[in-house]
Length: 321
Image (cartoon, rainbow, N blue to C red):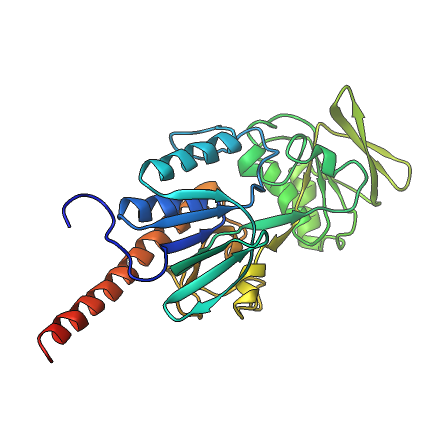
């Protein structure tokens, strides 16, 4: 065909159903729509970084509000004929000619391939007032927030062994960093020496409350009654993959807590791919978008191979071979 329109499908209504409307899912959909594929993105409307003021390290769109970035992505996908629908995918399963995705409101979407880009959820420590400040002056990523917090009083709420290393890293942005041990183990001798050399004070005791004045964090109250002054609190949340749809397909997480995929995002289940934070929880916006783009390219190549096989079979059948 030379019309610039997608070829008619003989079977499922979509070439690819993408579940997850974040940077990974929208980047994949953009690649697929520009490849003249029929693609739909199912978006539950729960972006992980919605509370953040800006997305950083995004070349050409530095500091853009996360919701504005996603809104722009949806417009771009739709401009090339892709669809973006609001909804929550509940289960998925194979069919004779592809896969079916069932949404929790009863809608059913059928595609030749399925790409899961549902991301992760941040599980925060149970400290009163912490969740309400999340994304504002309670943050998690130095590369996302460090520049904006440079030179200020920073406290690290350590819940595991990564806390001391986070405190050392934050010394790149501030000389006033305190480590709150909370539920983390005591630093070993090497880490203790490094913290001391870096000027990081270590405070014992669990955090029990945040102190806020005029809608600004001013300190953290410890169980000992001590108030630790700070302008921002850095917390490492537990990253929980939103992999329920993959589990419904018989894809359990591996030893590292995520579903295994190859370099292109292909899973062990035929026709099912995954990309972004759901399979790599630590990547940032740019990394998630790159993973989605790579998956989109690989998906289109996989569909082309299938289209070619069908064309060859049809040609042979027409020739009586």
